[in-house]
Image (cartoon, rainbow, N blue to C red):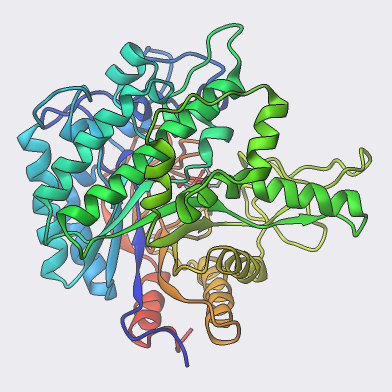
Length: 474
Ligand code: P53
């Protein structure tokens, strides 16, 4: 009973939210760099407001983030101290190909990640690498229109060939696109998409999604060719939809809302466009242009495992009177009256994790990997800089218990668990530093002030004990 002996405990980050060094080591500019904090952020990440370069009125948190570019040795040593078996991070595409369409990669960028992976292995930490976590070189956004352009498949393929070859033996777990369904909810953040006046946004989103799906299958193919030990996963922003009531219309709406997200994973895990999606696209007047060989490629190169983020369940209703919405999340959801919420209005539902795991496992029958979960909260350090984050321990304890139940009581095959933002980092949704997820506190605020000093929180030793007991001692 309990978790498998080789269970991959660890933590997760993304390049744009922690690295900084945006103009160092020959790195090119990316969409994630030019997304500011503040009121305009939401319109920018959803592709409604254009922001393709820096201006003087805004603050751009990704430029420096928590400066992991210069602190990675110190940070990985702390992960090692907690006993991490794995560390999920993402590669910044524009460090490897600064513009995205070059024939030859940037050696300095390649060397940076080689050093970082070697540093992980010093502590017995297996890197879990997200190939793209919301980033797209700005040159590809401006010259090609990002993922709406089929040429992006070739550029992504180049990136994959280069990194799979260079990091053979150093990395064996890969994720092709972080939260691939985010293309529907935050298309500029998720896929560099900005919509021109009068453009058929749905058409562009689904055409881009097709390009990403083909690119993902191609990446899976190449990964297996380069090294049969490579394991490739898809990545879903998950969270099961509940009907607000048992009214059949509500239940049906919940099923349809789930399918909107499952669509991507259906293609990546089962290898075909599901019938419900083809019908829905037809109704929307969306026509996906495909090339010969696309469908065969999708069919043949499905993923090895299903990874996902889980922060909350979601609720839908068809009753216009039931309209109180949760705040602060890109996924519109009706407020669940049975659940508490975080300071950012994200509702807390540990059993929802078990429900989500069971839905995914029933549907795909492939191993699962929880690659994001956690509580974004305000931390208040004492005079010594120490944070007693019992609220975070409480959240994680309950979610780990729920995932344990899914494994022990329901028989779900789970490869590992990496909590989100194991070290404090920039929030993707809001750009704030104040919304912290870490076991390690970073002295930096929303405006970019602070020493960047790292301090262990109370949850640091708690998580260390969870890992050393393989999840028995919560
Ligand atoms: P932040 C919304 C809903 C679900 C997942 O989010 C999301 C988002 C984006 O807000 O993104 C994932 O930082 C994403 C991470 C992100 C994390 O959730 O807004 O993969 O990059 O940081 C948490 O609190």
